[in-house]
Amino acid sequence: MPPRLLGVVTPLFIELCLGIGVGVIGTVLAARLSDASGAAFALANHVVGMLFILFRIVGAGVSVVVAQSLGRGQREQANAVALATLGAATWIGAFTAVVAWVGATPFLQLLNAPADVLAQAAPLLRWLAPAMLFDAWNATQASVMRAHLRGADVLRVIAVMHASHLALAWLLMYGAGPLPPLGLPGFAIALALSRALGVVMHLVLWRTRLGLRPSLADAWRLRRRELAAVLRIGTPGAAEAIAYRLCFMVSLAAVGTLGAPALAAHAYASQVTYAVLLAGLATGLAVEIVVGHLIGAGDLHAAHRLVRRALAAGLVTSMVAAGAAALAGPWLLAVFTQDPQILAQAAVLLWWTVLLEPGRTFNLVVINALRAAGDARYPVVVGAGSMLVVLAGGSWLLGVHLGLGLVGVWLAYAADEWLRGLLMWRRWARLGWVPHARAVHHRLRHSARGEAG
Image (tube, rainbow, N blue to C red):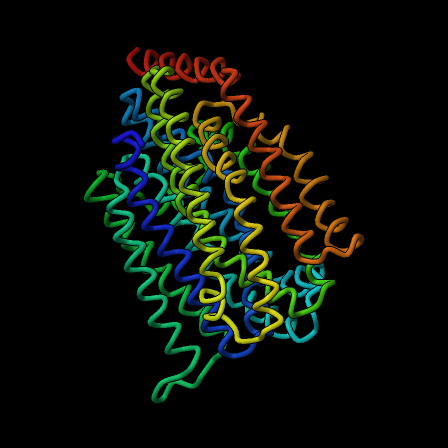
């Protein structure tokens, strides 16, 4: 892996490991209450993830646009974009929080949540809603820091944030001293408090590391000119992510028809799978940042070489990680439950993950590279059909109608990832992104001339 990319990947990988670790620990804490609680925790977090994808309208574009501006040497423009995205984060974060609170029960019913799971998941989702606003601010601030190649500083904030979250979650979920046990809502309250701490720490870093001093008006004002470039990249990226999440939710509804044990097995296997994909995800996010800098500087040949080398490294890493997880499956899954039926189903899914993960790596690396090069619409147009027919439709066809159960759902996941991944690689290898990258570089050069004039 190129040294420049490795310096961005390393803190990102550790940061993602911490995030997945907290998710796994949260699932373990919930599963200790009951398997129904574990399934409720997973379903509520899937809904949160689906709603938070709305923030991708800003999040998918801010790091790319800031990185491109910095690559061109336009620091003032990068700062203006960073400040503008705070207001967008406020409005989108508040909107998603309200939707989560109001639509908790209907969303979970759409997922065919069993009655015992729904009774716990709906209150949890309402408690998780307020934290979504803090998460929106944190995501914006962290994206700007990473675009400035300040990933190590972001990692420190994330570490403190997660540590405080887990410490508070343990106290609030199970009670200690005068504190009564709150169960699953305790996890959500701890999440909101830790995210508020993260916002404060990021603001300090913006001032001390980047010289950015947001005003109160920046937290709510929408600046159209600065947000235009962000939306140009972010809107297609958000559409792609929303399409994937909706289709994934359809697949979860298919799993819900298989019963609570199948839903729990899916949740526990997914937690292990999330850990497997970390290296590919970190590589993809790092590629987006570094390619953005290279496109801004006009070095398209370096961008092309970097993506090829990053993809090769990601494929090897994903296959090794998936194989190791499958071998260690019985021990890893035992952390969540001792139910033999659930353990057996989840262990089989981990072996199918060895097929799934290399295909996912193509998407994680190449789609981010295409987006950083300005070619943001192609992944949406090409990927939407596969997600709808192969991921969503295939889950119901293979998993429910043909009776393959969870294995059928996992096969649909793998087929979708491979189809989309190979199509994205063909786009990159055939240089379909180059005209878009040249247009981005031309636009930045024209903007620089305008500012100089």
